[in-house]
Length: 236
Image 1 (tube, one colour):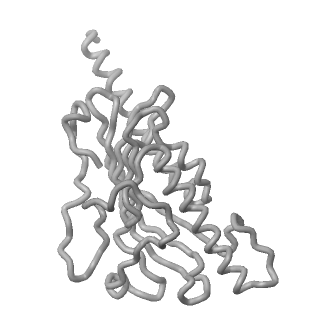
Image 2: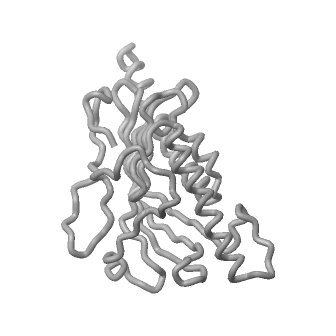
């Protein structure tokens, strides 16, 4: 086997390892989210690379690792407290701590990974689509409610000294509908972030593409394509 063949083999093995690590990183993020481990989720994001962005639904764009903390940790804990307060109203005889998640549920079946690692091996892009279910207290009805969701993830990754990390992150709910209602019926309801949520650094981008019956489908997020360096491609 020639030196060129050995180099090509080593590169192929490295790319397979990169894809495996990136896939595991996203699965880890989902599992941590199902356990409401917000600090663990935050650790999946780039700590040493500038330009981190996080966009979840209509919350807007949060910039930097501090912005990631505001939307992942602070908003997560706000939602914990809201759920617990509602459950205490329904079940006054139970002692329900804010972080106990009594009666709450998050499930995702993350799938359809499409991952492209840059030719220089320093960044990567990924796209995922996943069905999900959720249970949380609904303050409008005064009781816990079950939901169906379909989510897309569009993510840029960066290789840091110790591991791959998330760099630019979009969580795009295609729909979120009560268990007893179809996504067609619920598509006419446009939910906005509550006023007590931390404010984003920038407004929601074009990547938000929730299903609405009367609107055309956007061509976003674009699937990743092969590229050599990040300067040659688009940013999620």
